Length: 84
Image (cartoon, rainbow, N blue to C red; front, top):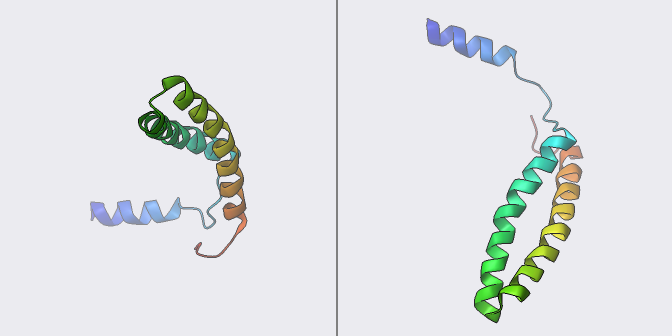
């Protein structure tokens, strides 16, 4: 009985469209890029053996991929395919 009420009330609160705000896309981009950039720095360091070079690669990659990710997210948010 209690579970049924929870299921019914949770269905009422759901949105029918799956839209994200710019701020959510941006925050997702930042959090993912931190992980991705750390990975790039570590890989670059193993390949080059130079920390300064690895950090410069990571810095450039951080900015460019964050911009590309936000654009990618916003384009996919406009595509209705696969949404309920």
